Image (tube, rainbow, N blue to C red; front, side, top):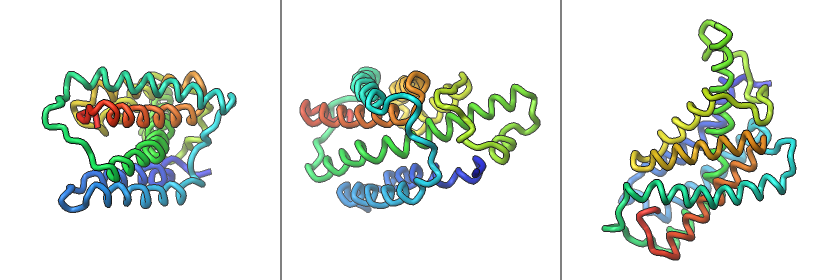
Length: 228
């Protein structure tokens, strides 16, 4: 079984590749080309790394987890809009061209929920859980011990700690813009709650996909492009 240190690259590479492509200015890569690359490159990286990922399913029903996730995702979209609204303005927000919008829609609905939940709720959450346990035991250099002597797969479905919740939520929020921090913190807590309640990652992925799809359709139908 691979140690956590050996698992860093498979979990981190899809996430940081997506973030890296997102940082390329529009005048260098058009939105259409950029999102096309994200779909191809990050999708290929997820396929390459899939052998090292933790199990998506837990002990409960897959259908029930997907249903809970979809419902939680709709709630999460409303939560996101409500908490983001004081920090954004419709002034200056412009509609996206159709091809760029639908490419982003595909990335947000199919790719982001997978690599982000793997990185945050599978890797960071479990690593923080194990680190907290080692620290509580008085282990010297607890982070090194967790990286070199533990595996994510040692964590049972639904296991949690406040350390894991706080650390994973903080890092999830840090991956978003400052104006999105209140919404991202609330959303991170929602995803942690799903992990604890359903004891699987598939519910979190389904919720994340549901949120992104709901938000995209809301923006498209209402013209509230400041949320996009």
